[in-house]
Image (cartoon, rainbow, N blue to C red; front, side):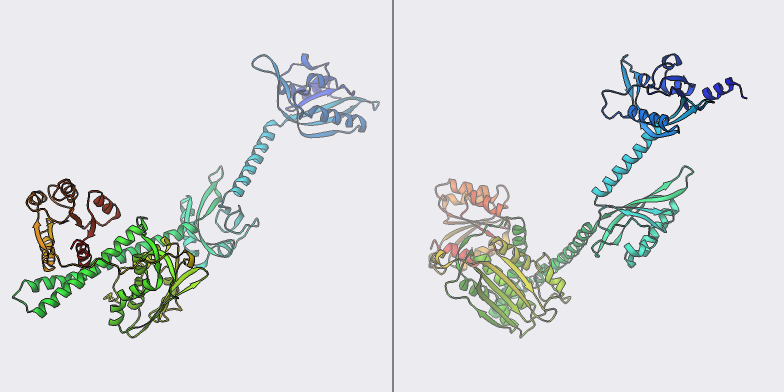
Length: 637
């Protein structure tokens, strides 16, 4: 028989907490070992002889503290069954002395086994109660569960797809998250075929090989099959995971849907390409008219020309200047419209009149190409609210476009009709037509059909973009369609149609002041000698008396002797600018009521407002429309 002191030594040296309890409901502590004393920070004197539940009471302030109840039930089962009973980790706070001297409770978790001890007569002598403090383990498991919970919340909240890969990328172990790719929890070794389009397999495999070789983060943009079956783009980043020995055992990755960003990048590249083409085209279009103008100028400097040669030379210069002016006007119009600087001068317009004016503008081009034009007008009195000049510009632009892209001898048609309270104008041709991709972007800036290298069709690819902007300013919309290359095109414009009751009497567009023959005294001030002299020659040829000055202060002094009736002033002058010159002329009695006309290269709406505020009556942009100038002068004659 082993000595009792051996049992006592084993009892006290056990690394687990043990104490012996009386086999009564009070569970009086009969003995306690060193391990339990250390864990509970108590002494034997404090514990032996006390009820277990007195020594370690429950926390009355904590309604969730169920440790005492569970322990009492476990001991009751031992007494009733005479068999051991084990409790899993239970929460059993321990009373402790707080730093402020008060008594509190420290949350602890224990596993416990209660074993009945019998005497030689078979009577229950006591209950051996052993426990292990598993607080650290429980807290660690709780932290893992919380981490897992947060990870799940993250994967559900993010638009990204989270995935796990084996160390050699041979198997996708998990794919989760409510992202743009289909979800799966099942491992798959065929993930490359399942998720990556064949054309990107080599790209992805090369990226993986580099990341595996360097043990570095994988970051790669590639195409991917989306959950709806379409092909999109993803940015995939995967981080290598290493164990304590430094061995790579897994990759954790996230895939972001960048399809929209890639689409915008494609659009920007396409816009940049068209911009470069446009600049090359602009250079070509502006240089083309300079060649005949330069040749004509050289010709005029040579020996005397007969009247026929002189007339043909001047006609060449006039045509080329008009062409350059039209190009520059298109550029300025697009700039003003896209920046929202165009103000419409809206009046009640007869649609038939607008169409006739537009056709009249394009008739020379149509005739030169031998086209047949069919014009279908709406019923008389069909009216819209709009800017006459701008709507004529829209129709003329569409019709001119149709003529440019229709081979000689082709057919054009302009048809206007009412439908569902809207006026629709269709411009049709049987020309070169458009491919579907061109139809889709026909109204974008710088868009044109393919042309030969000599760019014989002309233009800058601005017209349709301008048409769209102007029609939208009128509250309308535009569209185009084509059956394909060689099948012709249809461009449609729709505007709100004025009800008959709302239509006001039309102003007489032809009611103009009758041109007189009286001569005017005109002062021209421009520091560009050639511009001033040629303008003076035109005015003198029309019967006016013209004084030319190149210095604004000299011009101001000259008006004291002979006040002019009309002053044509450049804005960019030396000394004082045209704005200040206009203010001084308005301040003098002799020129206070003179007709002041600004002739300048500054054509923005802000320039116009500034010019009119300085006292000018009219604002003409270089190269000026001579017919418009004559009309302004005719009012005074």
